[in-house]
Length: 283
Image (cartoon, rainbow, N blue to C red; front, side, top):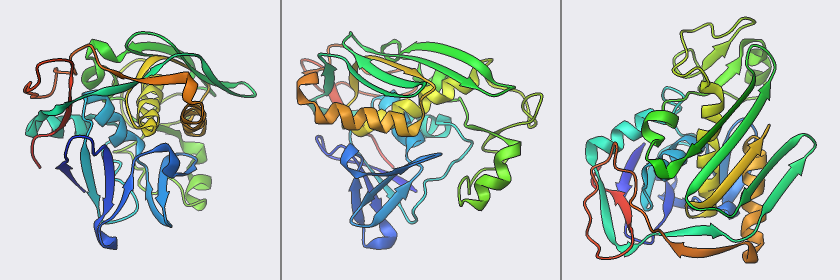
């Protein structure tokens, strides 16, 4: 996989180099199927497991980028978005001469399915409140984050994906979790992780926030509002994107009034007003 700088206004685009450079924009209209990961499809061409990379782009303020890949699945790496964040820091993030826009939420948009719930409400910045409730040994966890606080690289990106050892055989028989391994997944036994300590006491819910940020990137722009999720997952996340994009009265395009994340980037300002869009400075 290779990440290339892109012109302002390009957005995030996946390019299958093994299929004559066929391109799939990272937008809600291209969501294909959602199960244990999020996949995109256009004209029968598939890209799977997009959420961690998309999350890193949004979390670190990258608006325009071309993602070249020579197969249908993005690498899972260590199961988090941290390797991507570290790669961005090595090459730098360059601001561009075009003002950044967000989807500013004007009225509530909600999706409910039984005990699962996700919604976005008007509010300044980009805040997320996420509650999970899994079987033991995870149980109930809740966290609230504010991406405007420039904490993504240290507080969200390192959180790894997780799964239950008891479910492994069934999932592999279904053709899922093909890239999962002890190096890329927190494997849960009856009493807790069987492959090392957690990076955070609440790493499970932090990873759900990571996934949510990546899935909501498919709205095409970073959100400006407060997202609340309870027992949600990829299907609910992308359902919210679809509901949001369908209801044009629920949002407006707005220019960002604050600076983009700086903690692990090397952005250089080139604009006189507002916040500029940003692309990777090099590959």
